[in-house]
Length: 73
Image (cartoon, rainbow, N blue to C red):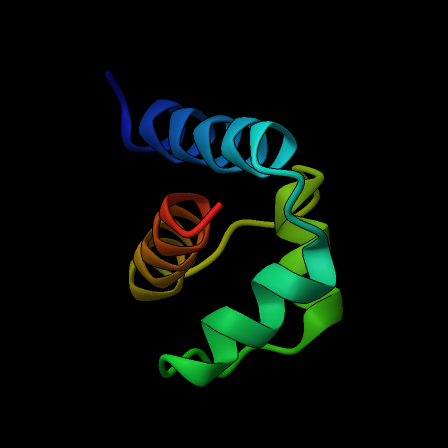
């Protein structure tokens, strides 16, 4: 699996968990920002729609944020 494939797989997983947990983009961004993310909401939204890649750290922070938010549902 290439790096691009793993990036796409993680993005798809994040968006699937968001749908299952009824997590909004805004809610995810707020949580992500509160745990140290520094991208703006528009950049996160573009990533979630597959329009731009993110640095690995930010992808990881989004994954942590959505997992923690999902666990709280």
